[in-house]
Length: 252
Image 1: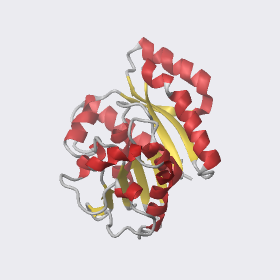
Image 2: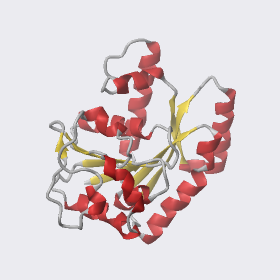
Image 3: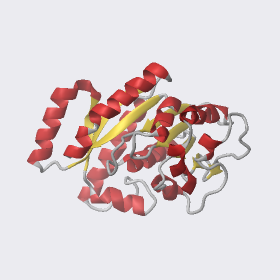
């Protein structure tokens, strides 16, 4: 099983949107997907299921390794889900040692070896984000082009480096993805130029634009490249599909 974490300690940068589109594309490519939602808002979970059963995300932290009796929720032929539950927010108050439990539990699941596990993380540099990085083979970080989001880049990169050094040397940092980019904004254009100069290849060479069609598709429970209507939606579809395909190709 390959595990990809979608991580940024800032909210509103498009983590869940990217997570569900990566899941949709992987499934279209024939891969089984396990989606793990560690964000208490449960946006990724609710995209695929109205009610939650089976193994809930908080149990990944509270159950001792080897004691899980529940299994992930089967949503479709190619998708299983470990949804966020109300108790997932309480994880931040648990003993620090619990951050290594999710990795152990996920390794112990009976899933096909070709399964792609996608972990959606909360907007905080806390235990859940650390646990996701410890469990992951790779991490990608959506980034909104605003001052608050950009200011957090350094802290996030330091956290990834710390996890690689102390817990998970196999973790591959795929890079930062500039998201919700307004191609008509001179400010966004300038920010991208400055970020590329400062970050080099840490900033992925592709971007995602700010498209209403993407949020409309999410609200409809479908990927943006399904049921395309209009030129703007067509651009959004091509862009999202190409970005997701490029990220999946970069997985170790």
